[in-house]
Length: 254
Ligand SMILES: [Fe+2]
Image (cartoon, rainbow, N blue to C red; front, top):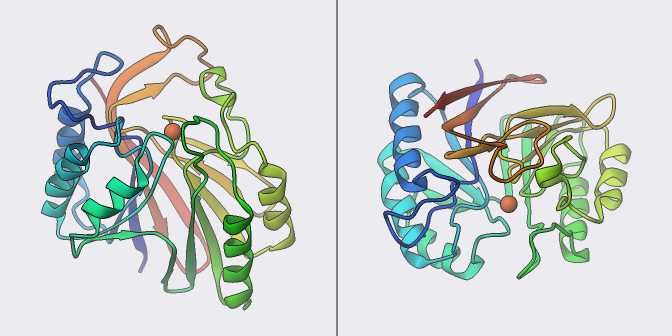
């Protein structure tokens, strides 16, 4: 018996329904992502949106996502990314019984903690003292070997080897790395932002797991914003058993 979570990330939906970004239509790609998901993996438990839900922060973009993803009839947990407008995001999504901002979520013996790494007007990530303290106090609250911990945050904390994105990670990641190294129950840090699927060891126990974008991927190792974009949609699948997890991905080039 396992819990299956589907990560959809970096949707970059715009106010204008015909808007094109990286030669793709993010709205159309999200529709195709959802179509594929409902066809192939309808037996999932939760959808996890790891930020950059909107590209322009518009209410219209959140309205589109809300109307589309509510069709799954599943709980949808989200965090914000550097392109999001947190006020607009929360004001729209709080109207839905399916959408919840990820703060603290316990599923079986897994604790998920959502952190906000965004700084207004900047692409890079930064964890404020408030976020660091929130993380530490939740870890203390569940200080019990029974729980495995998953941190969910938009920006990546280690370089992924793609110059296109490695110049805007969490710039104070050493604070987060200290927390991870001092708390052996932390097993995963799930992020968006890098527009591709990576699984990179942080220490001997914890891994950085990053998700695909639902419309355009940054080619692994790529540095060029025109040549190193791969159009295609998809999602990442996490399956959690009592003390282990596995991942797989669905990616369709278009
Ligand atoms: Fe981002």
